[in-house]
Picture 1 (tube, rainbow, N blue to C red):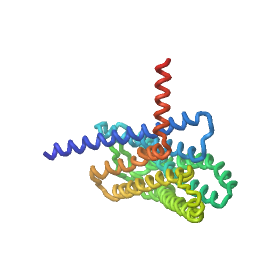
Picture 2 (spheres, helix red, strand yellow; picture 1 turned 90 degrees about the vertical axis):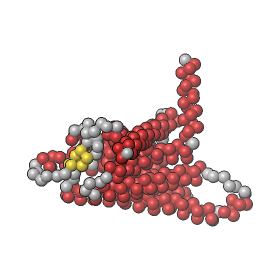
Picture 3 (cartoon, rainbow, N blue to C red; picture 1 turned 45 degrees about the horizontal axis):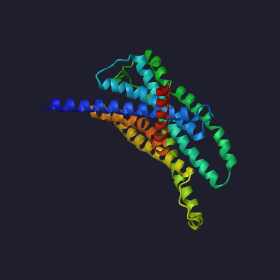
Picture 4 (cartoon, one colour; picture 1 turned 60 degrees about the vertical axis):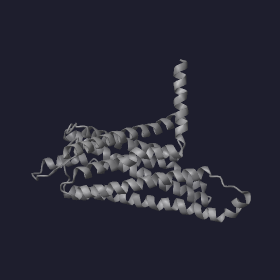
Length: 314
């Protein structure tokens, strides 16, 4: 009886990993296809540019974490050597850091544009938009350099006689970081992530408070004209708030679970799998927040039907 129950839960984990990874890949590539087809050779808007970089980071996380864990769940264990394991971890960390910073940048930029619109300073909005592409490039390069610690660490340990425990990820295993590297990692990665999360919460609050105050000031004008329509700016703000709220919820749960795994010397099978799944939730389901709020489904369906018709006519 216990074996049958364990088999059932193992099969359930396999199906969940496969479903989440497949949904995430389809969702992110659907957003990429949407921007590629709808914009073509045209220049992306500032918010759309941030969305593309965010989806690129999410795709890296899914391909480097979701796919290997799915393969491990189906029985393909330890199929990567030490170099391959550290390369996968490197890609996951870079994608995670860029995802966090891009979401923060999206939230802060939207809050900034709202505040500048209320103060009628459009020049500042234009100037800020010009630096977004440069900022995104700096984020990618910075985190690629910071997370290079995954490759430097084995070279340091090669000349050390200290015995270190290995961390098993299912698809591979690698030596744990020592105290010095843990402190360096916390200073360069964990602290900025906490700062970005707090900044996201602060800017999200601003996106709610500023329009509310403006609405209170002009409420008598709208009631006079009987206008109750939702403006595109309001829809865009709602979309970003939904995306940021989804990120903060999943990131908080993932951070708590990862903390539990780090503190426990022998974490349970359930805790490890739930932790891996929680870290994949935002990269996999985040694109569907964009698809829902930007009405991409109808446009993607129209594009798909147009392509099918063109193939049939040929």
